[in-house]
Length: 411
Image (cartoon, rainbow, N blue to C red; front, side, top):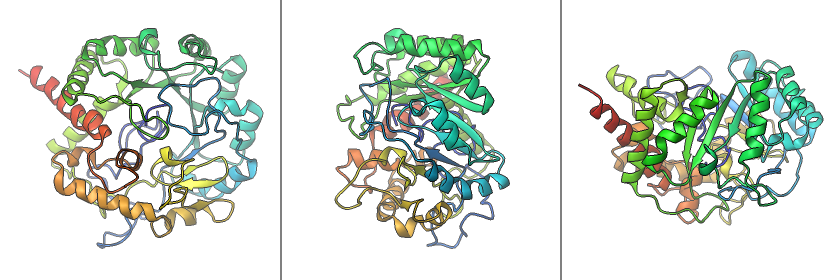
């Protein structure tokens, strides 16, 4: 996911929730909870209780129009009705009662474009859960800061680095977006609101890695996630990236982090978690029964629910329809999650692709399989393909680059 989009935007399973959690299998060595499916072969492979839900309060991306945005409805102002949030809150509040870390992620579009009054009304039905918002920060003013503090909202900001690296983030009027985002960040800092960041890198140039890291370290973010631009949705003009160049970029980024480890770098943490599991003798290869995938339900503005891959929301396909499992205005969300695999034909095809990756890819133990949207948009509408650009640049190259960094810095 390349914009301020959730699924790729946090450490793998078991990592902190900011930026947004990604729909990966259970963490290596993590036992299934009582709410997860049994380990009998052939049973469903999704957990029956998610760790978070993603809510789309509006489709509008005001005031940004990033060149790499994949969202099909970003210039239309569709608002989520309050009764959709109320329907979602009923099972979510029960899940949150059992899991203090359960998170409701407000992600658009630009969530703040929904307005403070409407966003407050959407949040009101939820109790005992954590709220987070992923924003371009352009609309952040003193009133929004007061709102974020009052509602105890965790903030993730989408910005691609210093001004020269931020050229793909532009406003609807065609102006550079760096200045308006930095003004919003300045207000967050003035009000003492901590924030994480997501940066999209269209050209993983190893010569720019240190500058990228230094910018975010100086900015004072608590967690940084770095997404290499992907081919998804309406973003079809992605340039091919040399995997070796990508590996060099990750190695250089690891060098910069090691020299000044003042922030949590999501990608480095992914590799460290994997290495820790290997050294500790814990299982690393995700197993469909022992490590059910988090279904990561995304609730569209109209109540439609897309599992596993928020990037598919708003799209339709001749074989799979609109990719939704159902709608919370017709069926309860806990029912949709529990019955997701039998209700959602594309998920079966996706599992075939994951199994093909497991059988053929030497990096599967680290990667766990390509994401649904990457497979779909790169493989001509198929979910059962294997290697994607996301695999090569953000998983295989990442592991190779950080491993290279370790080799070169170990006595």
